[in-house]
Amino acid sequence: MKSFLFLSITMLFVNYGRSQFYPLRKIEERTMYSKILKEEKALLISKPNGYDYSDEKYFVVYVLDGNLNTHFTVGIAELLYQSGYPKLLIIGIPSTYRSRDLTPSAVEDTPTGGGADNFMDFVENELKPFINSNFRTHQYSVLVGHSFGGLFAVHVLDRNPDLFDGYVAITPTVVYDDRLLTKRLGKKFKSLKTMEKSFFFSVGHEPGAEGDAVFHLHETVFLKHAPKNLEWKFEYYPKENHSTTPLIATLDGLRFVFKDLVPDDKLVAEIGFEKTIAYYKNLEAKYSKKIKIPQRVLMNYGYSILDSDDTEEAFKVFEYYKNNYPEVPVGYDGLAILYQRKNATAKAIMYLKKLLEIDPGYEDAAIRLKRLEAKSGNDN
Image (cartoon, rainbow, N blue to C red; front, side, top):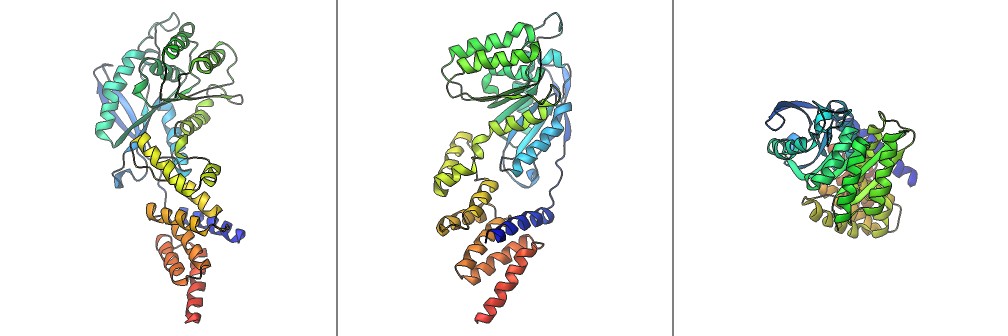
């Protein structure tokens, strides 16, 4: 039976991917004039697939240095969605004068620096209102920045943490101005009892002062003084350098920020399906958004218990799948298998026919249907 289920799952995804063409996400170029920055500001905007056919509001990820980092972030967002994470609206912010906009102070090597507060004002009072008024956005938003962009993310966490709900600071240049932001953030953390935010930061193989400063931030500020309820994680990538770290760190950072939306398969198996439903109901309160159990979670758990004696649990999983994802064949496939085992041939045939309406190319289901119809005819 296990080999049959493996074939079923494999064929399901091969055919589902073939019959449901998955379009390449587009990146739209927009401009807006900033009175605060006194310049025309370019934006790179990528809506998730299905945006134009739904009324859903989407979590927003703002990507600094967007001219370099937007494209691979869009790809990462799609891969995460295929793994059960939420659909994300990506907003890339190309840099105009990054040393001006992303640094907290002017120093000898960067005399034009010190515009981080001004840029933060632009993000809060012009950029986010512009995005929120032109796109269907959820209130939960994330900032992703690399190098000076990571420095800016630390700056915002210190100066205006409520501007974003999650932060991904990749190789933040916290060595800047004699580790000014490390000192400031350390003082802030000591004064706070709680901070309900998510903060991911990382560094690759960065020998010398820049890398040492990131480790120092981790060891002296986060390990010793992180406020209660601040969900944070530090990651070291010894095989990556300054230029290659953003790819893997963006993936890990977004996974961390949204980690509670995709629990480990072992957790679902341990607590059972009813408690899994309750788990996601609690998340709805956190995010102020209706949240369905992700397809990947349902598929992995549902197929894993098809060989067990807990038929009732399996029925609950695939009924939930069918009701919440009616355009996807997986729920119908699981129900057809379960009803076939109960010798409820008519219902098994009904669900196989529905599956084939969605995915006519699913050959294994067509073969099963033909056999059941022949059996049903012989029984009559």
